[in-house]
Image 1 (cartoon, rainbow, N blue to C red):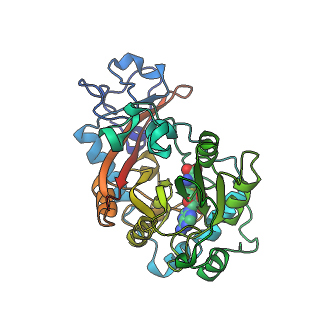
Image 2 (tube, rainbow, N blue to C red):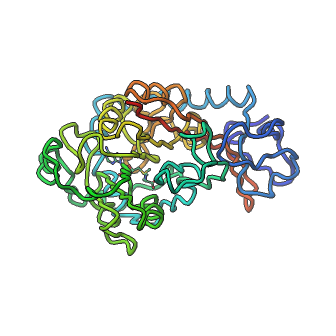
Length: 380
Ligand SMILES: C[S@@+](CC[C@H](N)C(=O)[O-])C[C@H]1O[C@@H](n2cnc3c(N)ncnc32)[C@H](O)[C@@H]1O
């Protein structure tokens, strides 16, 4: 009989464990983008690091549900929860102080999955979901290291970082109604990446949009992260503007006018924010999109390996946990993503659950990963 541990970190050194994974992705082939490497022959499992569109059996779904129920059966007492919200910026800032730019990988898959990041005239006609109703079928490689089991940052006692406040942000950027002159004001295509970290998406974008008339803005509430973005050799102020900004700070404005952005992108960011705050964040970001502009979203999905790995005592609210270093993570369902964006007045272009089987060929271990990938458009 298999334990939970064996279900999610199933060591299958000498044999393929049919109890743990259904080895046929789908006989019909992929019905969605996000890669097309299908595992049809169980014996091939260790031939690749990742298999796409893996369907879960009813038994697997039930075990995942039970595991999440178990690790969230004890919530951190409410009286102790406040710091994860009020000091979120500090936790992330210490994360970047410790890991600098060594933790996340460059998002090389960006333009395959999100062709909307390029002005329409530069896109391949086949690769545009907002025009064709579907997307490219490129592979999205490993998107985000799982840091749920990371040790806490070393410098817990270091001085608190200077986190942005609404006053700082407004003083720096001016009230949105007064934004008349701003970085990128002459661009004909504007992208904003929120929660950009150290720029793993920004640098690939900067390289691609040079001399296209496009401009990318990027923000994060961690001053250390933004400093690292600006120190990168590819940082180029003629196409990029990085700034410190807390998405949860309702009074803080952006250095661009309302309705001036073609794209807002959030990659593994909204999961860091308490679910009760999310709707206000998405509503506010939506006000900066032009009519026709698109919100691109990629993040953790419900019952991803990293959710099931949490131990009891790390849960703050349903499907919302804190890691050892104080940073937090939520695990989304498709319905929740749909509500979040449609409640903000956006129209759905894509809302996918990206289910993969990740294989550690060296250790002969297989893991179920679940990520969400969605695109929502402002139609008016
Ligand atoms: C998992 S990291 C992802 C970083 C980056 N998007 C990437 O894909 O590499 C989450 C990021 O969101 C940022 N973040 C979390 N909450 C935020 C908030 N309220 N305002 C701005 N940034 C925030 C963190 O500082 C961190 O850089």
